[in-house]
Image (cartoon, rainbow, N blue to C red; front, side, top):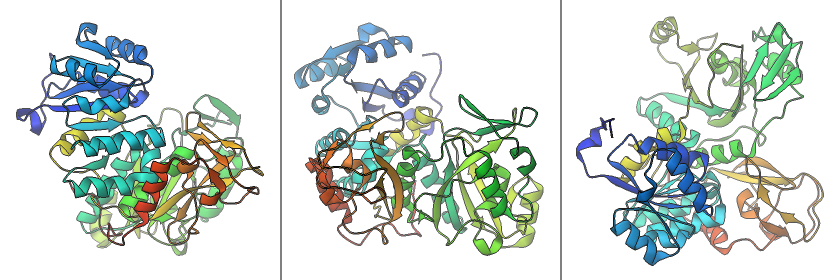
Length: 468
């Protein structure tokens, strides 16, 4: 290594980790970063495609002679004992090696839960990248970990942990946080000369949007006009709802509306947009979690899927000075926005792994259910229909994701990712919520974890956040 680890943990023992979903995008960023940090060591890598894992490691500069493809627990144990990196398709074999933290990144609800529970049973910490698992089983896993003196934590580098940490910092400073959230995955880039707007690789006409770059005297009317101008582009992603469900359980915030607002907004407008309605904003009540679609011009910096919080201001002169330094205040001075315009995936994850190995979590140690990631039928569902999870955003076939406040959700509401890869047990009409009794073949472990997460009133409150 020609790059030295300059972190505060540089003098401590190496943090050894096992990684599932090891051929995926998050895994690549973590494995690449681990090459720069001598005291962060991958011990066992698990993925169904072991050839792809080996090829990925080789592309990152690993000597393939240090990798051993293993077909079971005994082989994993021997490889790790010999100082090799064990590569396996068998997640159940991972505890046979000696490591400190599991990084669960499969995105598969049932498999991810089983692997996390096995890690906790073996006395190992869990860093959960798979938000799909946490949206169903995160509370159960956190309680299980705490009871065993272990850590179950979201991972820095993904928006949930970054946002939970931002909220905790602001609350620790005594600030009154009224709204929190993130930007959607891809910015809306307006080309005024062409009269078009581009989202990733899709460009559509939006001739009216150029005249809507300023919020004007009626912000909500402007936001509605912007939404109409970009109506040809999709709104909302299942992953967004899932991430905000995880954030809700760690912060006590809840959705302001089940479909989220998704305003088309510029970062400099966030304090106005996410102010209460009496101040011209969109919020019906404080304590909201939401997602906005970042609007920018070509050449302007991206929000990069970052996170934000909107706080009430207090001393007017303090905030006037901060506004002079470029901080974002609402036009009436009543609210301010604080934001991190990035999430760096596995590049940031080493901080979480170090903290977990030291017994610290990035999120609340005792989260409680504040929101339910649920689903409404997109069309009539018939008995026997299969609800398959797939695609980039892990959508569930025939189901539209919604986010409900836990205290307003019907008691029999099924969490979306419990429904993944099940069959419809009774007819569900278009627009209806998917209920627990509507599902056949739900994974027993997920179902148990969901019910266990509802038990007990103790947990984080709206005033308790992450503590690092």
